[in-house]
Image (cartoon, rainbow, N blue to C red; front, side, top):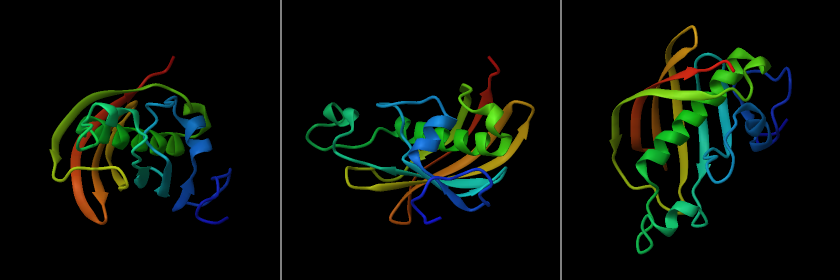
Length: 159
């Protein structure tokens, strides 16, 4: 399996999860699906989400037309979607498509703007989990430089 291929059943850790599989794992869809790929997945520990930021993103029409900048809240949402993929990968197929709700966001910092053409890497680290509540620490990086960071908690709901 090469780095761009879809993750399949039985794949070892540290591999890639492509967009088709992400869409099976989490319920988000365009225009709110903010993760294109998840790489370096280590179940129950960490992973890296990839968001290729394009001028075609709908939010750039109003944020800001003269100088397009990805909204910080959407960077945090992309971090959370990446964490949701890690949760599903950790818990297994029975957790696919379940809703995950933010409980808290702490220490959010935005250091540099994320703009069209950037490849936003979302480095997500599980801090702990208890039952259906998970806490994560994340950094957004562009060209190896931290552009955003936050700690957040989420709850996975059973239908």
